[in-house]
Length: 383
Image 1 (cartoon, rainbow, N blue to C red):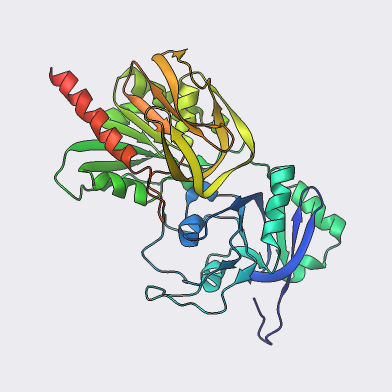
Image 2 (tube, one colour; image 1 turned 135 degrees about the vertical axis):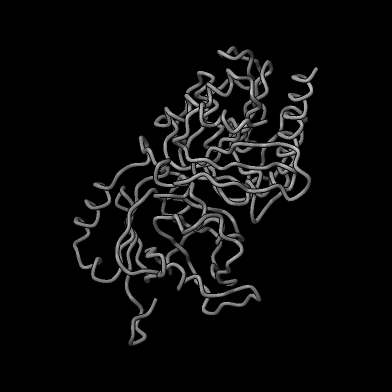
């Protein structure tokens, strides 16, 4: 970013371990704090910025050139940009795309997102892979005038992601409905823990009428909508804090209503089944993560954004309050649990994003699996 005289505004990035990198302001000028995470996607930066799962995170893009296609009005995944800060190496000097309405730099300034450019994002990513995700501060303009010790203290005084309860920040205030795009087949209640707009769209493509409801909804409010299935969305924060969502999940499981969860919803299902969760060293983020579906032995290239995971035994069934459970998907990079399913009840979940805008779309079949689960349940009830 340049000021009115054309001079670049200085900026600095400071990690909580003292690592410091200098660059130029990108987006708004000021200071921001969050968890430093890296995203490996070479496309889809607009979807990343507007994904509520990135709330209170400073996203480091490993692709070196960001902003080429500008920003449009069609690819938003929510009502606003959610990232706490943005780190890029070489921001595009011009925007070139027929759908672009404005530049990425202007969009970041519009939403007050403090960013930094001109830093070696690959070196920063390699450092985080070795040291693990940690708190970070980005400072630009007058904010860089403090001493290095003062900047480091500001970072270390900022809140950590572990123990963060962020659902209330991102959930919808009022319920709304997405109508089916094809003939109506099912009614689904989607519990918004930080839902992306493409998710109910993928369900609407399969004939589902989707009632998106606030995370504060009780099971009684959900049941009053007479759902054929209940969906628990992605979202930010530590799943260990999501006691209300876990209680609602347990009520849904006890009612034997088909359940599907993604990302944060997978962790909620895990907790409802009596499993623990833990924080990953640097998380899974980006759009090139290989996952194996253990029910078919098919390998999918998938989109991820999660810093926590579920503890569960891989390759064997385990007992839960709702019957037998098992791990259905596993990450081939590090054997992290990427999916759960119940053997004796209609419920399953995955840790990644099958709606995957801007891609890949290998996991879109999971919405068909949800439809099939509701079909089977309806047939069993009628039978």
